[in-house]
Image 1 (cartoon, rainbow, N blue to C red):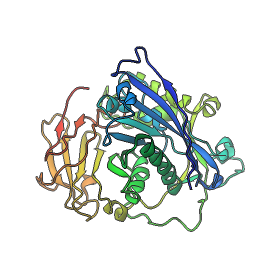
Image 2: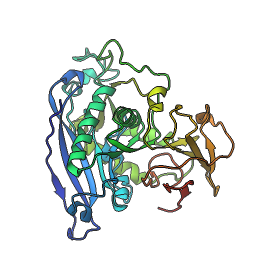
Image 3: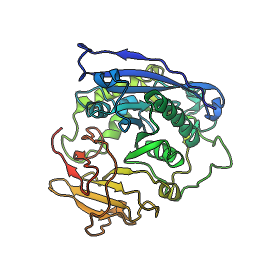
Image 4: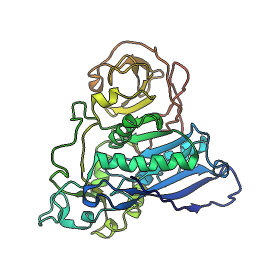
Length: 383
């Protein structure tokens, strides 16, 4: 059973009567938590909305243009998808394209409820003192429960039967795992560099919560090192962008910001379920974007006409190396992630309807505009 509550803080820019201005709206969704340490308690999930003022005045975008972002294992959603630097906000990009865009922080992240074990330094990874909670804090099932509460709230708020989901990194198992179990509520699914356990167990481990540290932290130095280790060429990102994102990260964690020179906190998680069988069960349109070897990118779409697995006849890859003008469309085959090739083929109807801008602080070298309803994918240079 889920309890849902919502409150709004609307930040109106100047000239709020201009329908082309963006609004940022804060929502809080109540959920009966399935996080083991606080199981059964009512907690709050923070949800940010970015929408054109004109769409907000019309009570939202069109029924097929309601989108929810789901973040990965370290960075909360409002930082990952609404970066406050120049025009780096993916949420803003989609909102300007006419989407009603939402992003949620999972339990333990950002402005959502932080379970009590995250306040004890002894529960950290590599802590030298005795932990007060010697277990991993969240589970993939508690994440799916959080997503379910938010999806249901947005469906009611916008009077739609289905919404689209976008997941990045660990947001892949979160969003896709939920979508596979609730395909009647999900219109389309986009996965950016998703985590994936092809042979992982479909069932939770015998012991829950799993043994281990409850949470981890990341310092400014560790954050910068994580960016720099992925850089493939000089000038690949603007250093001020990284600093802006880090500042936003600390703003989302006022407790962690007071620890030493400031850290971001994130829960350790027990994961299962997002495997080949679950991926194969998806019947909804799915778009997969995954960086490859730091200089090439894959765009993968699935026609939804088959259920043969991740590399079925309905799943194709469009790839282009930096500097090349055209895509090579090839069927997805085993070993593709290791650079396998499968010949030329462009069969299968592309299905979807979301715009993907240049991910300026992710490791993808180009911009994609997916031309849905046709049989090809286009690229756009520039911003």
